[in-house]
Amino acid sequence: MVSQKEQTKKAVKQEEQPALVEEVGSVEPVTDPITELLGRAQNAYAAYLEAQKEVAKAYKGREQQFLRSYKEAEEQANIIYETSDAQALKVREKAEQKADEECEKAKEKAMEVYQESVRQASMVRKESVEQAWQAYRESAEQAWTFFQGNGTVEGN
Image (cartoon, rainbow, N blue to C red; front, side, top):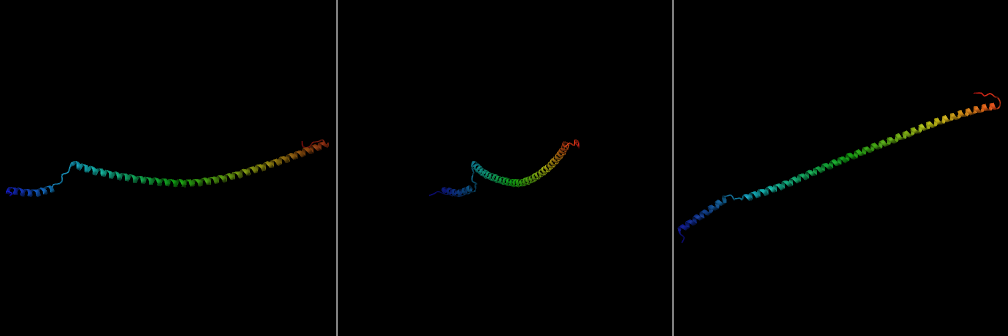
């Protein structure tokens, strides 16, 4: 048989065990400081990687925005160039047309001056020929008159 002393020990032991279980259950689990630091480091690294992804995404977005701005500026510059080029072409064509007209006027004026010079030269030549003919006729008459024996020369 079991003695009373053993039964008492057994009963105390059984009473202490649930109390121990209750005490252990109510105590917070003990954490290892290295494990806690390792966990914090992993969380920090994960946050760092996430931040790095966000920064890369922001840079990519900014690069796209700059590229769009560049393309818009390039397109605007092309439009301005084409407009300026078209205007310059019109100005050149008008200048060429005006120069052609001025050249044509100058040719016409030169032709008029030439024709007037030719007309004047023709008149001078005609008058010179007439004067020479008149002088020849007068000289021939005087010579004929002198030759016929009249002996006096008129005019000189």
